[in-house]
Length: 171
Image (tube, rainbow, N blue to C red):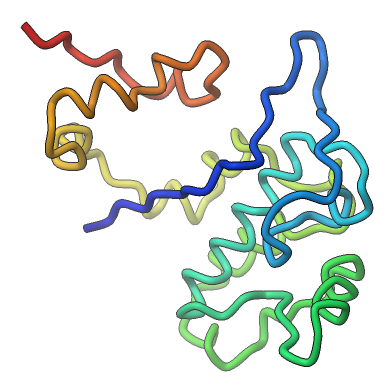
């Protein structure tokens, strides 16, 4: 399967209307925390993009975290704050320049310098590797009820709503 599911939204917070950020404190899984969240600043959409960059790095490297330091959590935190990671690691040797460029444009220390979701979707590497699969929703959802219950259309502020067709009601 080409599908990827991102889970563990236990500390997710809805951004209030009229705002672009929310205070979550230093909450989340350390290896995916953006520098601003690690510094207890407000989380915003760029903090989510940071997480996408970490996940992309892991997928391209075969599971290696860009900032993990097995000596201590404090060293991992230091690497995140300094944005100290390498695209020259041996596990990335077969990754295209476009793929490495994609990661480098998301894992930026300054939140306002990271690609947005729209910019990511327009990036050459993504556009080159996108496949139209109109049956994806049906294939992912073994139960028709599950399809409706977990639909982005049940969440009033979902960012994915413009990209997903509404589910067909079950009779």
